[in-house]
Length: 327
Image (cartoon, rainbow, N blue to C red; front, side, top):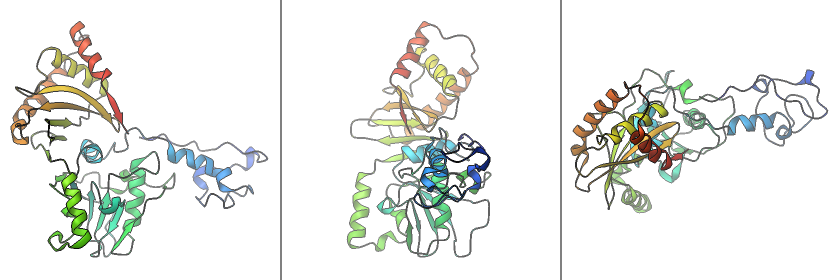
């Protein structure tokens, strides 16, 4: 979770500490407008400095505390086309029948209010701040009141604005539906013509075939020309997970069957994502049972507390040396 901002901010030149206001009490205004605190300085040179710092500070795990955190990460970084119905804590406004999260929206819009009033929220967009959750919450909040038939443009959110954790029902299920293409962009994709149909076709052709496994959480099979892969977002503590993976790898039990190999991992939004290479002929259905069996071996390995032996340490070093971070 993001660090809480200090209650008081530094005072500028010529502004006494006694007149400083808590940044949370100062409204966000235009950068060149007078600061609402009454200092006589422009906002960008006064409280806007603190606001800009708070907004750009990177939140390591932006989806922490949301149901399905691992799937949020997967949909943000791995999955081309998927949707998830979202349930808000508060009742939907009149005229908004539903809210749906989508990986990518047409024209890379952050949000969209359909002609019917339904809201689409895009997940794979450039973040305006260092907190993706706050960016998405700001877009969602504006989409709920946008005129039907209009997109919602991106903007920098207020540093003290709500986050997704403030808006979404924490008890609602989060179960992605992975699609073969982007027909979910349109309420009647079969009726698409002209440039709309051409744009949809181009997007579909670029999408890598992806399937979410059903037997384990947040594991996604994908197909590429050279080989297939399984990318599995895991919620465990990183050090403990690396130790467990290293033990299994050293014991020769980290694969998912003949021709498969655990090749490493990457870090995305504070979580570790192990990656396996799979043979071209190994489909998503073929990897379901091996993945479930691996999950059992992994769970058993977490119970071991003895230090890693030399071979296990070498395996761990190999994993960490090949690790990258997506943020």
